[in-house]
Amino acid sequence: HMFMGDMMNLLYPFLLNLIQTTENAPLFSIASWTIHQFSDWIFNNLSEQQLDELMNILLQKMYDGNRKIQNASIGCISVLIENSEDKLIRYFDSIIRTICQCFNFYCVFHYFFFYSLLGKESTFFIMLHR
Image (cartoon, rainbow, N blue to C red; front, side):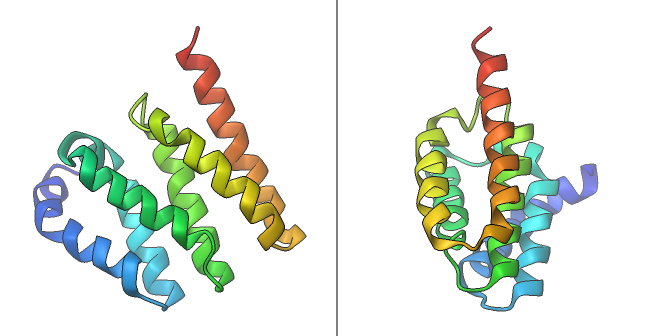
């Protein structure tokens, strides 16, 4: 990952633009997968404003009309939470609020993904407060 970490300075703006603008589910999935694979780089190199932008895009994409984009955004957020230590704690209210709103928006098929994401968040939160 060392070489790719250096390349992320060039690649990240492209990936961010891609997840923000593409309607192509496979491209969105690849871009969001790449982002969460380099979560260490994300947390060590992005400013708070850049992290805000990323999280807002991912949370908005949870409402996308394409199920594959919804799943990829949920998956990306989930992995970022797992790898964040305490860096995403300020987003938990937004994440919980979005999940609650999505329960009304999604079909039952997606409930598993939300329960998984909620479980990761609650486990992480409990571990931080021990």
